Image (cartoon, rainbow, N blue to C red):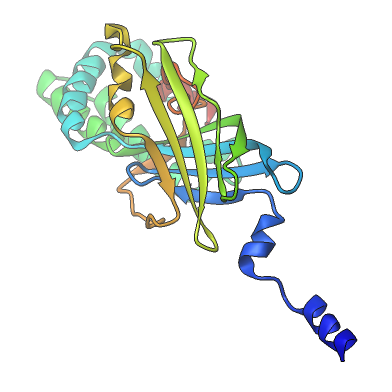
Length: 266
């Protein structure tokens, strides 16, 4: 009888908590609670995973704020009035749809390129200033509403809080602005996760670092409790350079010009 009971106990399934304790912490596409961003994490370590080395990959979607669009329109119209001349028009007449060079490119991207190309050629066909002003406005309208996708990858060593499914990094100093960052990963319930990156600074931020003030006041939080689906009103989407906004410090990378993107078919 004793052996039979022992056999039953050995064959009994593990509880979810016990099973989780045998795996390194990891999650995929954890959505941000404030931004159009998501983060994934994979960690390496040895059970019970008191110390783990974790690799993070963040995906961030940038969309112009509504209040920025009028300012952008004014800037773009002035830019195009100065730029459109015979030499420029001659160069863009040779641009071809990106599907000619990149088989498999999305139909939406081809349609957006052709819409912009049609608007550019309409500007070049103008013979007087009223026409030029009208067609440039049409071109700027065709360009507005775009979204840029940026990615950011980084690695962090985390130490487990004894007796908990929570891991925290040691504070790391940035080489700029006197900022210090801390990462925390917490398992919430049987399957949920929460990731928090907190910035701190001793004293006041230098004037050239004021762009980081919002993140000092609001930690970057990603949580499985956040609805992961949202609809973005993007007229088009393209992939920008590696994004360095969170967890690496520094300024965001410069985006390539629209002309450069289309000449290379990117």
